Image (cartoon, rainbow, N blue to C red; front, side, top):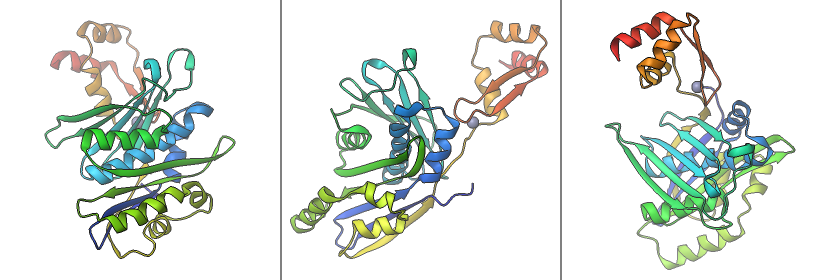
Length: 282
Ligand SMILES: [Zn+2]
C-alpha cells in the first residue's frame, strides 16, 4: 500500500478539542477511477470516502467502518468502506436509469462498525436538507453517537479530473469552556477548506491551521490508501450462500465462472471443480 495520504489526530492541551485532519487525494482518485461514479456522483462519493476515514479515526480507529448514503426516494446509494489498516474502498450504486444520487428530503446516512466478535453496530439518521455529505456525517454523530462536532469534507475537480481531496473534524470534548469554544466557532465559520486543498496543503499544515494559536499535541498518525480486501476465498465464500441448485446449474455448464469484485473490478475465475467442492460442503 504505497500512498502519501495521511490522517493526523491532535488534542488541545486544555482538553477542549480533538482535531483530525486528512488529505485523501490519492485514495479518492483511485477509488473514482475504479468505480464509474459519473460526473455528478464523483464529488459526494469522494467526500464520503474521506468522511468514512474521519468517522473511523474519531469513533473506532481499530474497527472497520462503513458509511452508506441512501439517495432520496430510495434511489441509489454511495458506500464508503474504511478499514483499520487504512485500506479504503467504495461503491456507487445507481438508482433506476442511472440517475445521480440526490441528498434531498428522505435521504439517509447509515454508519456500520464491525465489532471484534464480527457483529455489527449500526446507526441510521436522516440527512439534513442542504447539508451535503459533511452535514450528513455531523447529523449522524450528533444524533446517533451524541458527539458534538464540526466536519468538513471536500473534493476539488478540474472538469472530471480530481485535483485534491481531504477534510477535517473538530470534536468538542467535555472539558470545553466558553472562551476556547468561541474562538474555534469563529475560526470554523471562516475556514475555507477548498482554499487549503487548492494550495496543496499537507495534513500537517491543515492541522496547524485549524489549531493556530492554541497549545496542542499530536496523538495519532496513520496512512490511508485505496485498496480492496477481496480475495479468491471471499469470492468462494460469497458463492456458498447462494442456492445449491443454482451452483449445480453453474457446474453443469462445465465452464469456469467469471466473477468480478464490485468494489475494485478485479476478476476472479472459479473452476467447476471448486464449485463441486462447494456443493459437497454447503
Ligand atoms: Zn476487490
